[in-house]
Image 1 (spheres, rainbow, N blue to C red):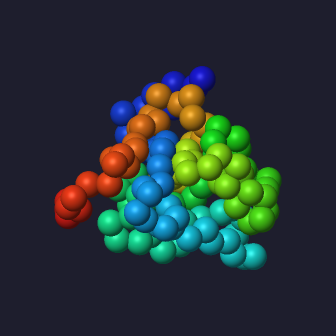
Image 2: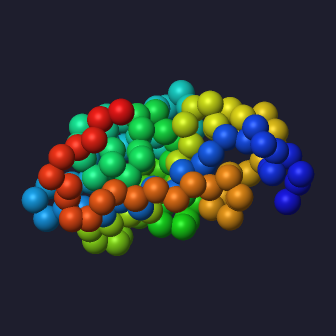
Image 3: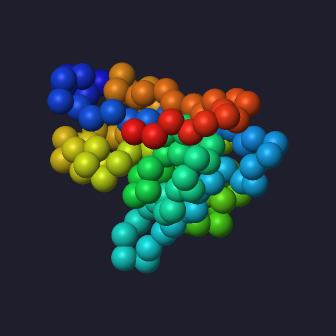
Length: 132
């Protein structure tokens, strides 16, 4: 691993473990892709959803689904990977600034980097959603 990967200014990568709640339909996020740019991105994140409370944010690029790099997979394949594990999924994501930083420093994003931050939503569903 290169020394730059350990740089203090390296932005966090988030490994978000999202678990469905019995009284909530779905994870609370939309998968989004554009023909003009490669990759799968998170679209709308529902307020108070498992996805939001697990740390997912609109515009995040998905790097891995359940430990598998999805950079060469299409939308349908990524959806299938998410659905492969019932009621939960683990998404390795980067926000646009982090994505640009790692590309600029030519560092391949993966779940073994020291900058990975583990996130997960509370189970069971909390009574109140904490706002920032």
